[in-house]
Amino acid sequence: VDAVEITRNRYLDGVTVQSIEIGTEELRGSDGGMRNVSNMIIILEKKN
Image (tube, rainbow, N blue to C red):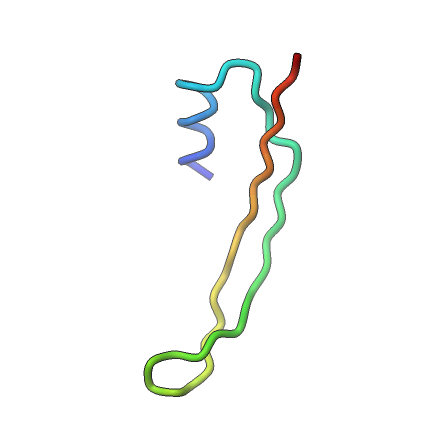
């Protein structure tokens, strides 16, 4: 979230956050066990 805000405020004039999705994926670790890994998708939109 901080990376998006810094990028948007410093470099991308007229860009707004369109949507934010959060979730959890189950991935297999190096030891063979399953791990929950959080993820976040932030969609930006340029306003004309």
